[in-house]
Image 1: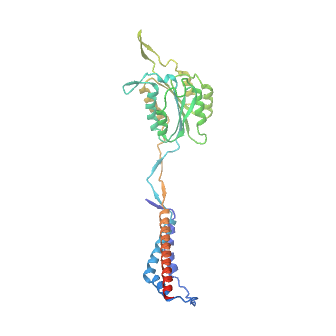
Image 2: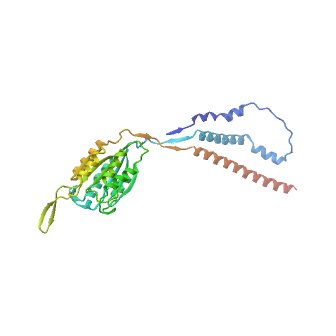
Image 3: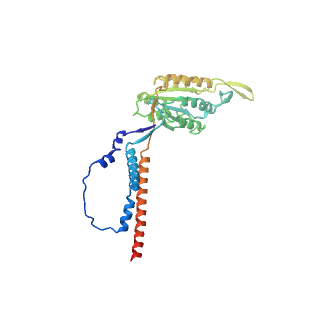
Length: 339
């Protein structure tokens, strides 16, 4: 629909009529120059009643368009949802070498831990409408892959494009937490949540998990830690099948402490089904804001009537100029013949 910011400007529409109807004093002035008969004839034709009427219509149209432009017409678009001030959620994903262990089952096939995480974490990201999300990848060091943004599709795409070995083969948990603490926006009043996903223990980095924990507590950041990996895995060898624990290096005690001291929870994901349940539980613990703010985009339209008025004015002026030039040329030729 069309919306007018200054609809009251329409009261100026009858202004030319008021000026036209106002009584004017007649002033008789002697003609300073006698006009030749031929010029008088042309002028009388130019200002004949028919031409006066057409000129009046053109001027009225120009005035109407100018007044319409002054009302500031705008096109009011369909209502769209605007993300509300929900929470800031940083997601830290472990890309160490152990994430390539294929001890997870997804849709009936065996996959490694990272592939399982991409699918299920991607579904979780899709549901976080209204939250500002960021993505950290850590291995030998921690790197900010995606800064805080409402653009969930970009976060999900950057997660899908991650590959094992991108940031090294070790595990810098402390650096990942410290980087998340640093990148949270302190100017925004929101819940700050760190979702930490790892399958090992801190083996690299410049900051220990305990040091990073102090920073998180000081900045009022909630940590939800998830330990990934199966407890039992069957390996085939020359000596037959044997059962091993692929998660023997998982430091559950440290992950539990990180969660407890920041008011979060520690979860254990031994299978893809566990991971799905964890994400559902996280949706309950940190619910998405239900109340959506809406806005209707405005598109300015004033330049259309204003541009049309300018175009008509230029065309009118151009036609008068061409007519005057033709008339002068005709007059000169006529004068030359008479001479």
